[in-house]
Amino acid sequence: EVQLVESGGGLVQPGGSLRLSCAASGFTFRTYWLSWVRQAPGKGLEWVANINQDGSEKPYVDSVKGRFTISRDDAKNSLYLQMNSLRAEDTAVYYCATLKPYGDSIDYWGQGTLVTVSS
Amino acid sequence: DIQMTQSPSSLSASVGDRVTITCRASQSVRTYLSWYQQEPGKAPKLLIYAASSLQSGVPSRFSGSGSGTDFTLTISSLQPGDFATYYCLQAYSAPWTFGQGTKVEIK
Image 1: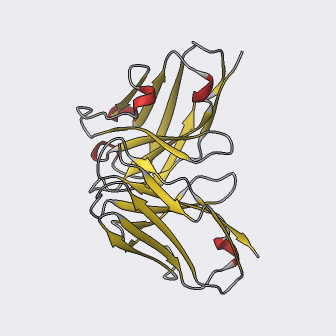
Image 2: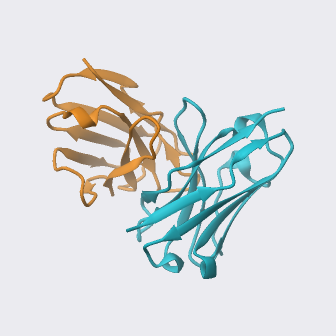
């Protein structure tokens, strides 16, 4: 059974940093594209970033470029999102997810971790 | 960026009704279009991928169609567990973009 468990969310002040982690199990982690998607309170879904199998492709949504970094550690079956220079508008539940093999959709989702940016 | 416009933004329907939700892309996304169901407080769930392929384990009352810029999600006979919010997603080009969502409520 595929399991994705996010951690690292919490309350952070504007301008601060946070690192989200996602522990994966139940599938061959190193062979999958992975993704972060977020959802602001009461709002819709927003794709944040993807990472391919060897980490050489990492597209981001424009609003986080230069501030967020997606990375992976295949030895630990873990996905990460380093978030710097956080803003109030980054407040959201952050989901980690796997992509289908052809990369055309988001397959499995974690339960999400809440990030709140506020003073 | 490719804009995804879903309609309607909400609808009221009864158990047993046929429900259709549409998603229009601002430019062609070929068939790189998927549909998700999200219940309150839960993670989204993949229903349809590649515009018309049913995800494993998803009931056959869900179906998708379309290509290029116009897509449809149909629920042939609405069931109690189907009252949720539905999103489309284009994965043709980065940045990937979701529709704004369609909330399906009980009439």
